[in-house]
Length: 152
Image (tube, rainbow, N blue to C red; front, side):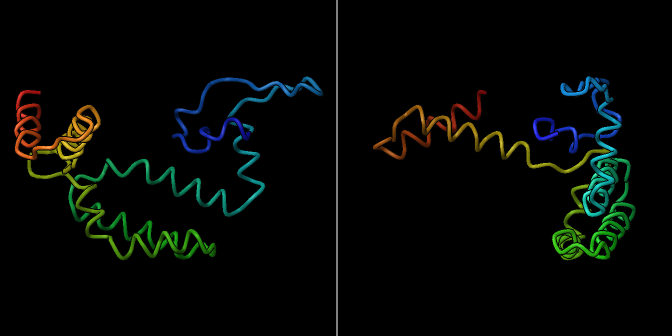
């Protein structure tokens, strides 16, 4: 499963409907079965995978209160897991519960807050800087950046 590590990180419903053939014996296994057998080998891995699967359903939380309760539930679950790494993640969730809940909850218009616009502008500016090989005049750079961002 080393070469198929992405299977561990995808949603259960998106696991490929493929079969793996073990070349030495000719045995055929479905990816679901292989994943389940791998997860049963390590209790911590199973706990982390189940927590990840629960986190994939954060988008079902519509209000801030629902999202906050969900984040607190996940934080407690991860902190009580007994694993040092998962406990650390749970503590981080507990520390930033309100901020994470803001990102998971929808606003009054039914949309989630996102920083995609800022990330897009930042990417455009980096592209301009790369293409320009450095401007000597800052005012020209500023005007070009504003023009590209305005008329993109």
